[in-house]
Image 1: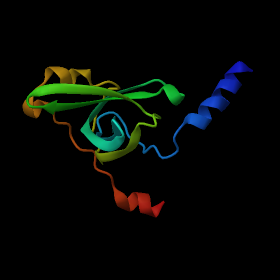
Image 2: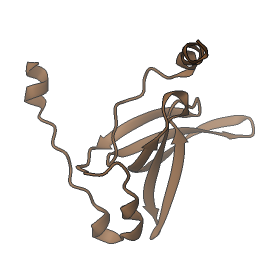
Image 3: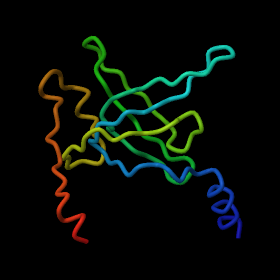
Image 4: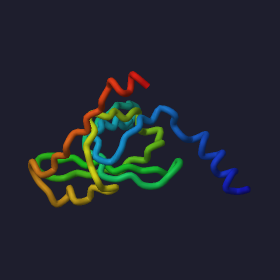
Length: 124
């Protein structure tokens, strides 16, 4: 009974416009930043290396390289601070967590791009 009640409450807080993205995808996360009275959008671009949780507690970790230093940031998927998520490219991976990218530098951090066959999608 209480589990059903919790899931009903969580559904009201969940976003409907979350794009489908997976581990290994390169994404742009548009985050709302409050600076005093003003609000602006800041974009964090990087590779999704992990997803965890479920429902309203779902989080994802994005990693990028800034001036030769690795920067990781965890975002709550259904947060009102996230304006939108754009998927730039999809990567081919065989792991659920890409923590091994932390040890790599330069060209070794690149992932193969997943080719999406558009003709099969439009035929179905």
